[in-house]
Length: 151
Image 1 (spheres, rainbow, N blue to C red):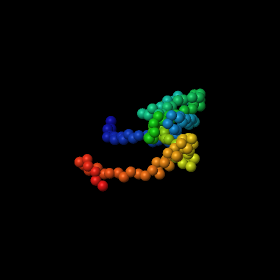
Image 2 (cartoon, rainbow, N blue to C red):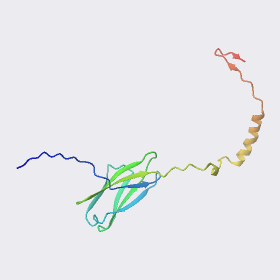
Image 3 (tube, helix red, strand yellow):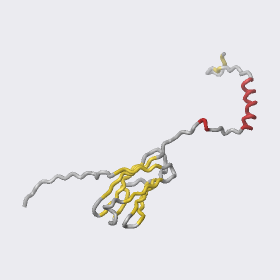
């Protein structure tokens, strides 16, 4: 019998691809995937590895041509979500990185904005503004720390 020292190094599997889903907070983004021909017809399992709660995966269709449905439902602003989707059969494994993002922010056009003050209220306020701006201002006296005044 021969004995040899063997050194093995285990690494993370390579990602087969990336999937990007984009949705606003409270909306849902869906994406459907079909299995590669080499995997169709054989039993498989599909799941997210340590998924954030904003992702969900379901399978539909017949065993001969199943579809994998992925959904992204963000609940808060401010972060990009990333999860690893794993599809396994007895013979192979398919790994995708799923990214959940938000649509780009487009600020409102100020030229299209309208004020919220009613025209009637503007009419009532305009004479009051004119009278307050035309009245002479009183001279203010500066107070000293002891309560007296100085000019």
